[in-house]
Image (cartoon, rainbow, N blue to C red):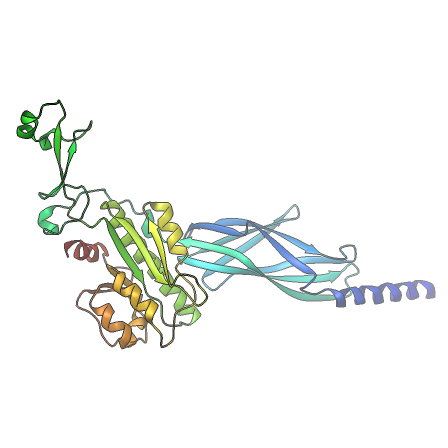
Length: 351
């Protein structure tokens, strides 16, 4: 009996030392895949694998797993595999996944809690606005004015003369010129589009925000730019989305060229990083100057140095509580998520 007690004491001491040696540095959770993308409210799944040393002496249980504020997560364990379901009601880019583990020795004498963070995990939640199907249509000259778009279209203005190609409208054939020509080629009028070939959306991010406020702001920014980009693409424009980069970047202005749905999705999730505060606003002012449409939050308008040039542009500004804008331009739409952004785009195409 005494020998048994002595043996148990030795085993208990060993397990205690083993438990003391276990830490977040030698216990981790491996997430696969490391990056997932879907639309907000989608339920996406990933797998989690627990890796730890001295597995013969301890049992490890996953007690909870969570990401940033605004991301919902739940998990289930089946046949030793941890399946994690990730979803969010907000659009944007979320990083990191925190796992809480319970470590118990094989004798159930000791236990401890360990927290591990998977910093490389990225969850990209896309806005629903880019799912909206927008009819492809050519703008009418009466609604767009006489401004040349510099590309083929359907206005009354002449853009170029070209040789007739199959499927070209026969009404544009210049029959009088063809009659004077010695060869059999057909010359057709190519009319101007009356819309710019490329429209530039400038995103201005200058103010730090509390985490809860950032989530809602990021969601509305994604939905707004998604709607603008989607509508411009349907109108026949190419789109540029530009924003100021951060210290250490080779180019002060980041330019995302968008010609299709996938490129629009890629550009939206790359917008969000730390804000660009400070007295030197040269990069931000360049973004504003190059933009056809400026998108920002109401807090960016609190700084007169930014608010003044923004007020001269067609602007979509996301409504924010407890903000005090210094200047709001006459061509500014204050966006809460319910407004029809297409009205703003009509103003852009009419200038």
